[in-house]
Image (tube, rainbow, N blue to C red; front, side, top):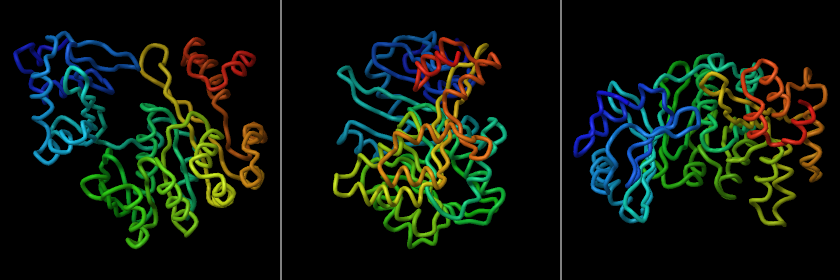
Length: 359
């Protein structure tokens, strides 16, 4: 596919990554027994290169990491990290072991952080980032653009407010430059032991805003809720595919006797849930759908009273006043604009039957 990358004995991984960026790809996969493959608009495409041996992949993988990282990988058979190649770009990497040897997945991360306007994000996002305290969640499946949306929201704050922003990520993806705000970015594994440990000490570091790269367990979620309640604006992510589903996921992480307290904390501290997915655009590229739940007194009451199943109905009411939207409505708008195909709309819908009826 590229003259720059030739099928020699060992491929230069830096040249390969540079070449992959030129295609506008989101990911690169190196797996033994296959030629290198890249993802463009959700589809994997093989590069016109030699099939990789276990030695090829190992040499490329180890050329990018230090001895300390090699030891972690050899002990755990998993390694997450991010890195930047000068004049090429920034990447998030995951190394893992298969029955045939080492495999690698690289995600491309833009060095320039996009503004909220660049990706036509919902105008309400600019209002949400002005909040003094509370919890804002951006959710969606892997590869749905959660990190980009969060980076854009923090960038908006950075351009307009003088705040201390602590990010805890595994690994750090977008690197922010201090414009008006002051950033302290921490990498789980190298800068801090865990999300929970970083959050425990974050409150002693005079933060205004805390970003939690992934809310994985009860300890991390509990710490996030406490931070949101004690006067901090907290951003977090979960791998959930709808706004009401996100609330259920958080509550279900805790034991039965703790759930009433968590519902009470959520009802008072949750500001918004943005549930995002990326859908192939007609003619190439991807377009985002963003289901938006904003906590108002009615929503807070439903969370507190364990009636989360009724929240979806609330999201459909008085939307001009509430600024809420459902994924179904977003999909219908994209279909009307002919931005996406009917097939892709239904395939990516959380409520395909509702969507079919509206179509």
